[in-house]
Image (cartoon, rainbow, N blue to C red; front, side, top):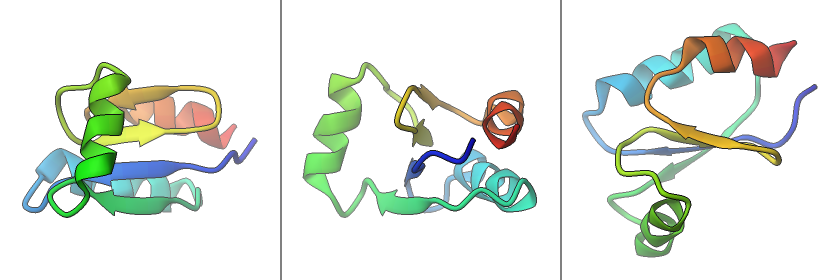
Length: 76
């Protein structure tokens, strides 16, 4: 299942780069939102309860940090 995926990132964020690389490896398309440039997006992820980047949001769930096992599960 390939739901729409949004990755909220910050500049110079290694876990953010790793998350995008894993999404690419799994051929999952995604949109990127830079939290340092988008105050509304920052408030949105805080409202979801996340305190660190990256935050990956799908139609069904969201998580923060580099979680390769969750990315692999998305691809299945």
